[in-house]
Image 1 (cartoon, rainbow, N blue to C red):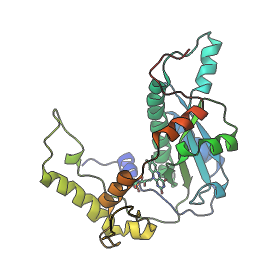
Image 2: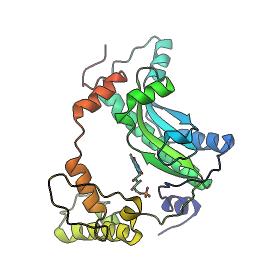
Image 3: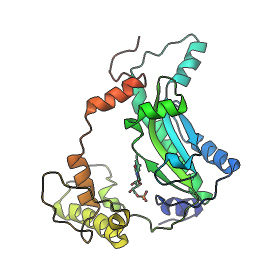
Length: 256
Ligand SMILES: Cc1cc2nc3c(=O)[nH]c(=O)nc-3n(C[C@H](O)[C@H](O)[C@H](O)COP(=O)(O)O)c2cc1C
C-alpha cells in the first residue's frame, strides 16, 4: 500500500473517549472548522454549533461540536434573491446529510493531524428539542450528529474494518459466499476481541427475548451490531416528529 503523512494520519484514526484537561486554543478550533468547510459540498447545507462546557458530553471532552443540517441560513440567501425553496425536504435532507457528514469527517482528520482525538455521538436527532433550546436554534436547523474533541488521555489501537474484498466490488456486485462472509465476520470479531473492546467499554447490549450465551470472552462486533439493529426500534414516527419540530416535512412534494 502507498503511504504518506495524510494516509498515515487517516489510517491512524480511532475514536477517543478519554480526554486530558488541556483546552484547545481558538486558533486550533478555527483551523479545524475551516478545514471542515473545505470538504466538497452540494450546498454548504450545514452549520456547526460549539460548546466548551465539558458537562454537556458523556466523555467530558473540552469541545462539543453539533453538526446541523441548516436550511434556514440558505433560505435567507434565497429570500435576498427573491426566491423561495420548492425542492422537497427529503431531497434537501439527503444532500444535507452528505454535506454535513463530509464536513464533520474533515474536522476529525484535521483534529487528528493537530494531535486531537474525537468521537462522534449519534443521539442528536432524538434530542432535537433540548438541543434547539440550548442553542436557540431557528426552525429548519436540524442537529444531525455531535462530535466531541480534545487532547487524548488514551491511545487505543485502531479498530478493525471489513477486508477490502468485502467492501470494494469492481464492475459487478459479486456473489457473496459463506466463506467470504465468514472471513469478514472473523476479521471484525477477532480484531475487537483482541482489544477487549466491549469489556473495556462495558458495552454488551442486553438481549430482550433470548437467553444470554455470550460473555466478554466471545462477545464481539458482529454480535453487538446484530443486537443493536435486531432489537433497537425507534419508532420512525418519533424521528419524523423530531424533524417536524425542527420545521422539516419529509415528503416528496414541492414545498409551497
Ligand atoms: C454517526 C456515528 C455515531 C456514533 N455514535 C457514537 C456514540 O453515540 N457513542 C460512542 O461512543 N461512539 C459513537 N460513534 C463512534 C463509533 O462507535 C466508532 O467510530 C466505531 O466503533 C469505529 O471505531 P473507530 O472510530 O475507533 O475506528 C459513532 C460514530 C458515528 C459515525
